[in-house]
Image (cartoon, rainbow, N blue to C red):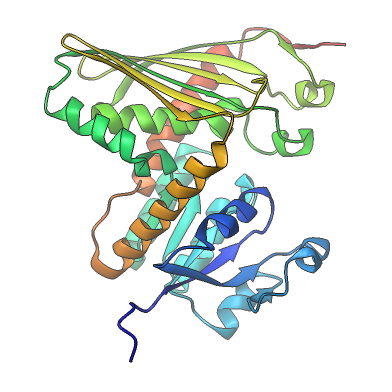
Length: 320
């Protein structure tokens, strides 16, 4: 008999842009194995490699035939809550891509539903699984950097997603900013008490402007322990995707470039593997190291407050 542990069997729900990232990241995992793929679009199903994985047209179709150890929800944002609820009702644990719902109320209700069914759910805030950030968090918690005055987080994409995605993703604060909002809460252990926000006054893509999205945003936060937070978000960063974190303390300063524009995939895929390992451990042992639905609800709530802060700023114009 083999001494290797039995792989944790995952079903991937959604084989689009984010789903393909999970497929690539988990291809070399020794802990989890994607055995099934759920994808409603026929063209996308036909484009999947013939590698022995079972392919289903819908989540109910999968659940009618077999129950995996867990599912990864990587479908469009507006489907996250419904798909998670369906899996939880069937008793199947879920690793759901952020933001897990379109509103804080929806995510809070989903958290109550999962708790009532006693089914574990983890939300895909992958920054929590970066060793460099975990080490920084420990130094902050042990006061190695002294009193923390300011935590900054920046996320600028090499180029924006398609306008059709931006029209349904909830806007830059919900689509992008929730990562930074969760990261700041997780690093500091503090809650957000005040939110101020501003957005750039022009949008390159007229279709995105019509959909109400923006190309750049800045959010400032006041936290419950007196720390300040700043979040910088953007759709255009020439050279590639960039993610950065900084901490200013009375006895130390640290800056970490979490995604290198030259090779962002390596770090990202490593974090996705660690995230999936943490999910498998949560299901098998009950130990949680990833984000909960309640964490996700608080990140979405901050995004809602940031969006509300700029709602009266006036109409945006598209560059021509």
